[in-house]
Amino acid sequence: MEKRRLAVISNRLPIVLKKEQRGKWQIEPGSGGLVTALGPVLKNRDGIWIGWMGTNAEEEPAGPLLEDLIRRGTRETGYSLKPVHLTKEEVNKYYHGFSNEILWPLFHDLFSRCNFDLSYWPFYEQVNRKFAQAVVSNTDENDYVWVQDYQLILVGRELKRLGLKRQTGYFLHIPFPPLDIFLKLPWRFEILEALMEYDLVGFQTVRDLRNFVGCVRALFNYKVAKEKFMNRILRPDGEVLVGAFPISIDYREFEDLARTGEVAEMAWSIHENLPNRQLVLGVDRLDYTKGIPHRLLAFAHALECYPDMRRKVTLIQVVVPSRVDVEEYGNLKQEIERIVGEINGRFTEVGWTPIHYIYRSLPRQELVAYYKTCEIALVTPLKDGMNLIAKEYCASNIEEKGILILSEFAGAASQLHRDALLVNPYDRQRMADTIHAALRMQDDERQARMRRLRRFIKRHDIINWVNSFLHAGIARNLGDFPQAEF
Ligand code: G6P
Figure 1 (cartoon, protein in one colour):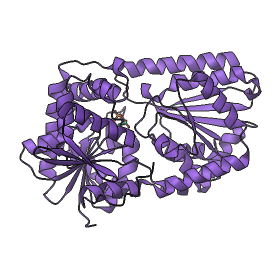
Figure 2 (cartoon, protein in one colour):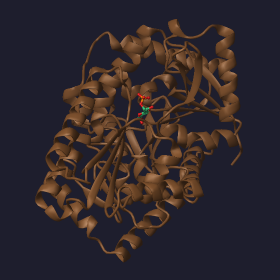
Figure 3 (cartoon, helix red, strand yellow):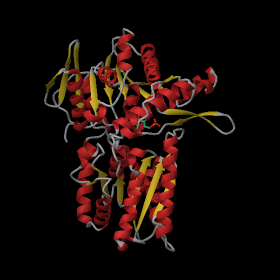
């Protein structure tokens, strides 16, 4: 395949701008799966990344200082960074508002959490136009423009309105909801029509793809031609390819890190400080879609039903701060801390605390040490596009003794269902039973399952994901899709 320059457009740049307490501006690496996912690919393709730096334009540092910080970011990441500046009002209404109070809950099937505030839509349009303008100024006709996620659905439409010809692809990282839920969106026609302005639209799973095609059929009545791995939607003025491309991780990076002496030492020290017990790990961004309270309560229920687990099991729950300015997220933090306090208050004995709760982002090495050493990972979102924690855990679990307990509502379940233990996060009893069964699973079965999981993820890694998408997007080759194994 010809090697074209790649322009990635996402809400966030892979760096964030932060003001230190002494007033000095700094850049820090951003969080989230996308940074991990696309960094290596952009480095190899002399790529450029267009996005927002997480600050309000009114508060950003002066021009030359900002340029200097961005140059530093470019040096550190190894590809070119182009910031889009957003005013405070734009951040509030486009990001907190339309993206996170409407699209995020609706697409995660949590309609009752939506706030259909009418003032958000014009800002969503305005900011998507700003991103499109940044694409115009920073790319040329030969570049492949790859737009990411729910915050930027309208960029393809805005590029066309600006009269620009670029080959475009779009990937939705979160689930696409079924028709009955999507229909509730007041801007359902605009959103669906805008998605069809791209040349290729990718979803995480076949289920998301089917949901999308179902909505297109119901709302537009366009013909859909089925190919082996993809669909073509035939609009009156052209066609759009749609397919499922389950995202993945840089497998080798996790495995290599897990093999280092530093990680081995950290892993040893984690177990040394929690002697004679199996460790169960939860790692999540603070978000109501992750089902953290449900998981904690299921763990407590397991302790209740199976007293043999007491003193022998500890749950380490890492919660990474996220969207801290949104009230609902603040409330969730309080709820989680109340539940952890109650469970620990109820079960703690001398020398044993059932839940270790960590509320901060962990350095990569430390995270991998937990992945490597914890006997069980509990990845139980209520709904999730993919969930890369599930894959990172397996890649780092080099001794192949770990067990992955995975929600059937995570996109990852469509690929890992054979060897993970699947659970319904709303079913507290079955979750408790599954945790207990996992703790008693024989070593040879653990190993066989983990080995297969690792082999699958190694074959379907991030490089494979990017290649599949670009193969379909640039070469428009619908033939052999290495990702399409479900
Ligand atoms: C999810 C979304 C990403 C987003 C990330 C972090 O993974 O799919 O688009 O970047 O959450 O959320 P934030 O709102 O902090 O960018």
